[in-house]
Length: 193
Length: 198
Image (tube, rainbow over all chains, first blue to last red; front, side, top):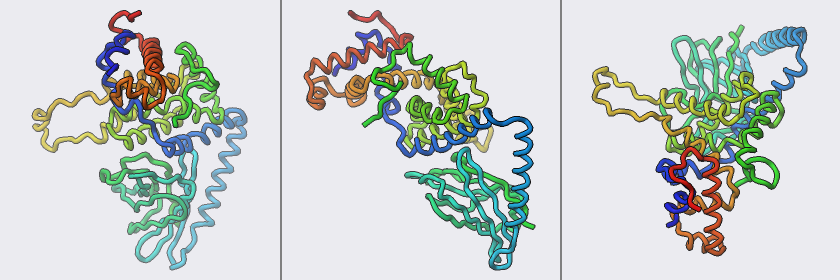
């Protein structure tokens, strides 16, 4: 074994350094999926920041805000319509740092279905799931879990969902009860008409 | 196979190159240059991971720390001082992420009197700054030097076995170990305990 000699010869005889060099934290790397998730969450908003700082004037910002509000109102009016079994429905785009998860909530006799277009989410990864949550007066409840991609349909038995904060987080399984992982997207459900 | 670390180009960065390069990256990040955050990830994610791994002793938990750190970095990028290096800023965020995770996971006794019977809890962030420094120093080494250091200190192999596995003479292993240790000494001078042997 040469380990005592090479560090001592270099003048590095600190036991803390030796302990670190024997720790996998110094040698293992995060996986490629971790990079995909981290950079996916980060790259696009930085681009948006650049565009904001270069192009936006106060007048343009005001116009953009007015247009955004008008578009949001129009979206709610169009989408707050009866669902197939006679209930109401509404939609919201759950916004993350660089991705959007469109969500549609529809009323049924048994409760509310929550349909997510999760095609923009990368796979949750080994030992992880995505979990949808509803924050309503009185607390937070889970609406179910999913692994990845495509159209996802979840359910909740709540009587009212208008005004609820819908969020999607990435959780470990098995893990602690309650939302513990990082939130990848969230939004507030408009009150159905 | 690991991807090349540090600055682009064929030369490995010297310690004196690292801080200015990191500051230039910080300017690009603050300006919102596309791809800057990805470059920050490629440069520093391993050190963030090291902090997470040291604090949680779990690969998956460490990856969560990495993701949360970069998410929070993005959220606070408008407050980042472009005159500063990215590394220390990111290390501070990573440390806060670790502290937050500890706070959430902390078990509070139902009976306040039980507090006195609980064993002392070590500071979860103790040594994380050193872990960051050492990991960044290791990541700045040429791959061949880093590889032999890992085989010596982590895999606990002797030089003859390393030479056999790498298919190189023992003298080559010795010189790589010597150069790697010298490079670490240059990066981690504050850990020097005795004068370097000639």
